[in-house]
Image 1 (tube, rainbow, N blue to C red):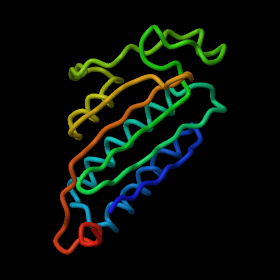
Image 2: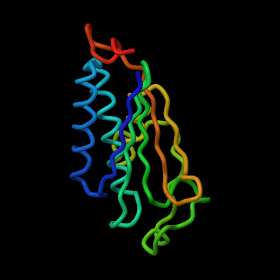
Image 3: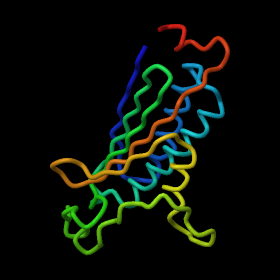
Image 4: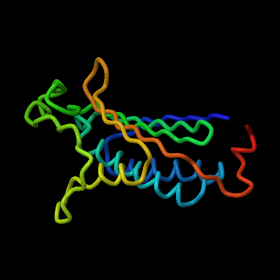
Length: 160
């Protein structure tokens, strides 16, 4: 069995816990192991926080899409910001004033850094991460996958 859902959220801090709670509720209801639920909720929170902070004009929204297909969960967070790397064109006047965000390197941020730990956490808590610019539009897409483990008697694996 496969399920998916998509949320369109305002770029404001209050949207981050909303996305996290919706993910946790769905995963717990489906019977996903609590440790996996926690890892995915932290990774989603970090990706949403990045979309809120770097995702474009204050009037823009961002999108969270979650796919559960068999034993794999894929989460994508898409924003309208300047994207990754120098090839991303600026979206608004405010974006033109800021340099594009470089494509993340899979290295740990220094322990004293106030920023930059989010992408490291996403990589540490999931099985596969991909960073890319949106095709044909400005913005970034952060997607990550995690192999699911199920609680005994979980509803979703039995529905297959």
